[in-house]
Image (cartoon, rainbow over the protein chains, first blue to last red):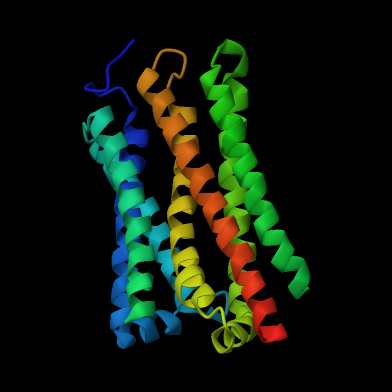
Length: 111
Length: 152
């Protein structure tokens, strides 16, 4: 048995859990930046993936890179993050970022 | 091809949702016997959401522009401006959660670790609920095209 105030997850779960939270938060930041700075959106459009140019594709691959790279780094660093902290951080990042996305486009629509 | 992909990507997402429900139920009833099934079903969630990313991305990039133009001219313009724009970005969050799920099921002893079990339950619930919301947004977007075509 264990309590949520302990560190019981293995290093890879902790590492990739943190990277998932960061990538999910970064998703909304990148989206807002992309909508406000045309040059950033144009840059993302200019990146080619298998010969396809699209900002959404670049956005997705960028988040995937954050997930993989940060996850690998955090796993190697073996960060001792408590179970409850990791769980709450992931829930908060997902709920806050998803609702922020909807609120952002609602505001854009009614502006 | 367009219609095939239009129906394929939400179908794959539904398979991802069903797999997440499967993960949830197996984790609630965890025992020595079903550990491999938890592993397998959590991998299935990641695989189906990856396939959804590929097929929906291909459809969105290749075919959506004409639908978008129609929707924006029609009475349900919000379907693109609010729903589609939100949907295409919220999906990334679900995709990342789906990729992370197998890390918990494969790397932790679920029989003893209650934290890992509750983490799996929470993530599968988040995946199921948010995916269902995106599915309904997708249905509304399809209907918005129809509304534009009938011009009412």
